[in-house]
Amino acid sequence: MSTITETGLLAGRNLRRFAKSPQLVADAVMFPLILLFLMLLVFGELVGAATHGGRYIDRLAPVIVLFSAAYGAVGTGVGFFTDLRSGIVDRFRSMNISRLSVLAGRIVGDLVRAVLVAAVTTAVAHLAGFRFTGGPLAVLGFFAVVALFAWIFLWLAVVVAMAASSEQAVSGALNTPVTLLLFLSSGFVPVEQFPGWLQPVVRANPLSLAGDALVGLSGGGPVLLPVLFTGAWAVAATVILVPLAVRLYK
Image (cartoon, rainbow, N blue to C red; front, side):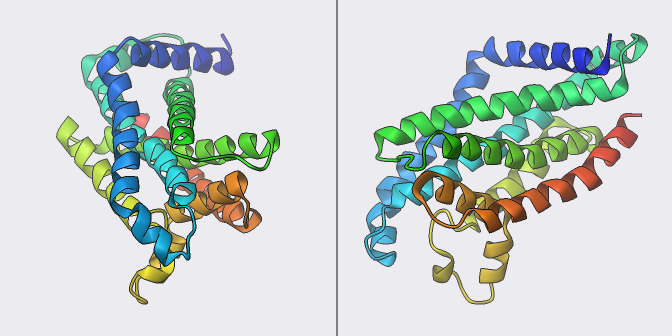
C-alpha cells in the first residue's frame, strides 16, 4: 500500500475509536460549549461596554472554537501515549507500514475530528447570535484557519506523548500552555484591557492571531495579516515539530 492509503486507513481507525466512545465525544464537545456560555454570561455585558457596544459573541465564539481544537490535542497526546505503551504501535512497527504513516494517520484523523468539533461548536454558537456574513468562501476559510491552528497543537501533542513518562505528564504538559494561551488571548477581553507590558505577548499569541482571522472571516475585519501570521506559526511548528516527532518515533 502507498503511504497515502496507509495514512487514510490509520486516520479512519482513530476516528472510529473516537466516535465509539461517548465519553470522548462528550468531553470534546461539551467543555468548550460550557465555557462559551459561561463566559458569555459572566463577561458579555462588561466586554460589550468596553468595546462600545460591540457584540461579545462575535469575538468569543471564534476563540472558543480555537480552544476546542487546542483542547482536543490533549486527547491526541494521551491517546498516542496509550498506543505507544499498549503495544499497538509495536505491532505497526512489525508490519510493512511506513513509520510516517503511523504519525500522519494520527494527525489526519484528529485533524478531521477537530474540524468536526469546531463545526458543532460554531453551530451551537449560532443559537447565541453568532453569524457568518461573508458568504460560503469565508466559511470555508474560517474552518481552514481552524485546521491550520489545530495542526500546530496536534504535532506538539504527538511530540509530548513520545517524550513523556506517564499520561499525567502528557496532560499536564499540554493543559498548561493551552490554558495560558486561552486566558492570554484577545478572545475574552480586548488587547487594550491587558497591562501595557503584556499586550505584545497577547498580540503575538497564536490563539489571538487565529482568533482575529476568524473574526474577520465571520463578521468582517482584517483577514490577510492574521492569516499570514497564523500560517507563520504553522510553518514554524512544521519545521520544528515534524522532524522531531519522526526522530523520536524512530
